[in-house]
Length: 471
Image 1 (cartoon, rainbow, N blue to C red):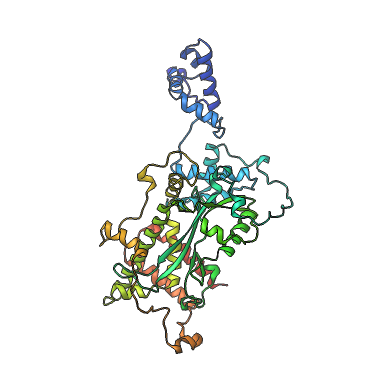
Image 2: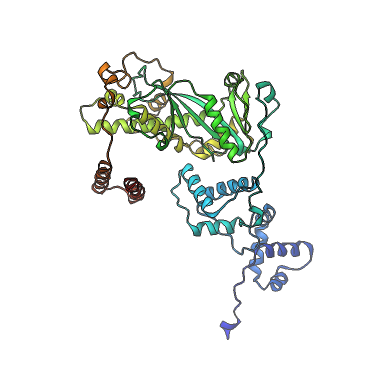
């Protein structure tokens, strides 16, 4: 009989909890009386009173599921919030958001934030429940419309009335030309080692544009046989950034998304672009010529260079371990522009979202609340072994040092090499070479105690190589 008289656990939904709070505020009912009305225990009503502010905040947010009875916090709260922010942007722009699209975006955000996370269907279902997201009629794409003709060519004078307040933080982009000594080693700066890197990201860190690398060489030998579409970054055979082509592509990309965005640029660059044909979706916001504020936060550029230098040191150390007699300078001379392109793309991907957000806000380049805590915002790569913090900091900022004279291995060659055609190049790898290399790499992993997680990335690479070999 005692077991039958025991109360069955009854959890209240968010809507019912708000009703409890209203009854307690507006009537003279006690907690016990309210508990009897809702058929729950008095301690449960007491807990609701203690969490009053949080419950009211969830209710007023409009995004919480009001029928949920228990709120379980996500293990990946940062990804949860970033995906919800992107979803609201997509909803406002009437994009056709689907489940696979959300899964892909969640994985992309996780990679940007440096978290080892693979979203599943179950995670997506729970995310939708937590945030009251559903794919109903209100999310259907708006009917097609005829795009408006682009406005006349903008001039710096015509753009002056525009301000950051005219754009949402997700639509404010900053970009920077970064001079980079792509193969310089600590203590030695070569005269032919310089390239220009163009970086661009929005103020929320959710969108990073493809890296553009500009160099002196029109056709570096290392690019022989390489498909430009397969590269993670673009290459331009001139140290000057091709602003007109780059902006035209940026404008087309934003037009396909139906967006109007702002691009922060130095006044000098905007003046050079005065004769550029009209941009329909990208508005140039020139910074004052007297301003010391960069068009992309300096801490973001510094983080990119630090990640690049750390990756470069790793490659140099690997080259030295392969050939014991190789000096650091000789290992550096073996770094090609193609290597630099890959390392620049990898370094840009490692710049964390939190750092970008806080840097834009701190430097006044985007509206926002107080920046993130320093220990979260200043996420820089660890100092490589063998270097002190001061030595690594100096290595990161090598561009300010005077280069030494001397030839460059990749740029200087004999007349026979330059005129010998394809015979002077290393033969291209075959399908058999690729498959053998996979077997060698897997065997090396197996014999050197590699973490099991790395095999997941290896399997994906192996599957893609096998697919390409079957084409």
